[in-house]
Image (cartoon, rainbow, N blue to C red):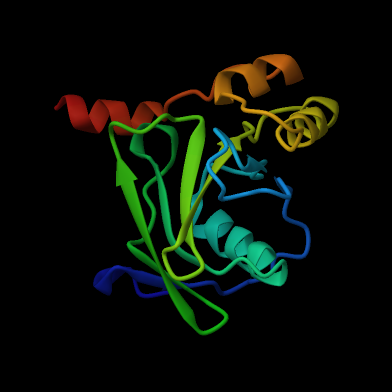
Length: 163
């Protein structure tokens, strides 16, 4: 782990074998949402490498991962997964219920609704399933239909920004 240079390599990396993610068959074609991701924690340094590896197994090569800064703990600027470097970026103007991935040579963008890590098993599984149904969907509608509460903001980050 080298946080001084802004990059990170997973130490206890599991190759994405138990990542809870669903991706629509028509992902990246302009639908409002391309799927859902149900991370186990709000620690992107742990969760992002696993998500990237899981998508890589499906033939989706992630090059950039962007997220709402108020919904997550800070992430390293670069993550090395399977020998590839993936850039990350946090933005204050992003929807906290979505993460965006630039994939396959920058030619496609995937928007994944974030199922809160605190969601129970039934609610989380329901959100993963609903997000892949045909037709446009908004993050709020997917989470509401699944019975999920909105993604809370990370209080620690709000306090730091206020000072």
